[in-house]
Length: 327
Image (tube, rainbow, N blue to C red; front, top):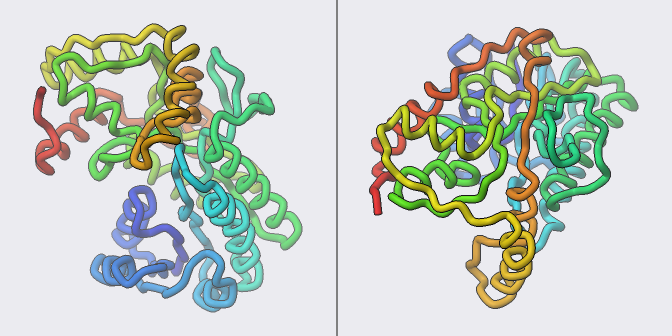
């Protein structure tokens, strides 16, 4: 009943650690900082000092575990220097799978990303959608290469590797990343938005997907975790229905963002070190994402939370954290 988890101090990894502990597993959690180690110990896990490059440390800690959950990774759409992200997401993933093989672990569940699908613009993508060959960001490319590395190392070393590919994870505990779209829409009477397509999955469903992938996933397969896909306008309508928010969004013309915004974002990155805009982010927003997560329902037994419930849970947590305020 022992499992090994990387990335336990993050949103997805933390939720997974808590669920595993509540199910009675002994959880050994990799911790690359004292703060992370203290947190893992506080929730009941056994902290293992090190990072994804500490192959020997991980091998020793993984010994006796039936499953490894590799959740750790760098998630940054606008990195100033992408090299560390590739090192962690690609090289680190290969090292984790290799350490699991050396420890005699049977199965590794790798947290990939829906960004690794690489679907062409438009339409509804699934696990079998051919990659377009175009990467919208360094993050998307690093996750695709990391996923490929995991499968290759698993085949080479005789380890069962299963990938889960979550879309944008939302719910209690998420305030950064893509959750900023929800907070932006909730905080302002006239949020400035772009008409696009978004896919969301509840943090609880994402956690279920990891556990079910460990139990029922086919080696060498990937499973998209996507509970809801639709237009930005639909998401705003759901927020209004759930919260009574009466905001009136101002939608920027797509042609304006495509022709001026991408170049402007590049200039902003050059002129302002703290700019949160970058060409990769705008390209991703213009592209949009619609994913079909039904394979995880059919094959793993994932049951998705209605988007209205996810938004309601997220908003309740935002309020508890003092993150809301209309302007």
